[in-house]
Image (cartoon, rainbow, N blue to C red; front, side):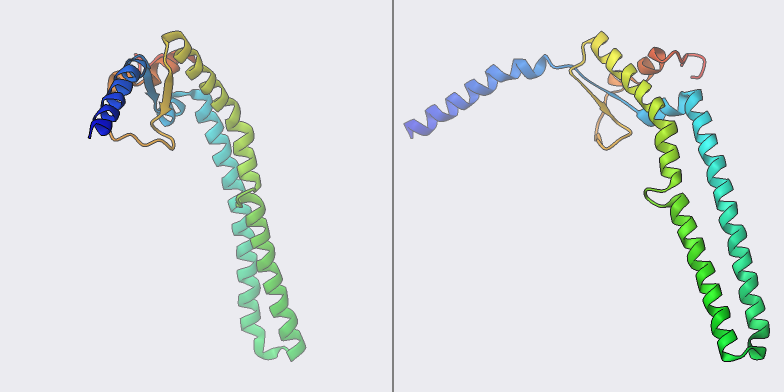
Length: 179
């Protein structure tokens, strides 16, 4: 009994000596989605990406229309074809559909051109936001800054700790006129 009592005493003494260290840490958060939405260059990049994606989607749809026309033509003339012609027409349609799928993956797949364009165009904007977050954190003495809009989910976040407007100010965006 004496041993467990002294262990508990030592445990609480250790916790009390560590508590001031935790109390001195300064934590803040930002909402990266909010910050990005306020940046004109981000809106420009998004418009450029959207325009490119629409062009590629239209190209795919035009090819899809051509394949649909091939299929309608095949159906209309199917009875007139010999077995070899029928098979050749079916193979042509299948090959055209496979080409559309290859093109779709080339443009919109996980490592496709759209992803690459987003990386190329958005990364510089994200890096400038990160630099501004670091500048605000260092300037104001924060130990940790979390992204409320990212992977970290907060059950509670005090509004006074939101550094998003400070980061926008660091980036040269006037938030007073927008609110």
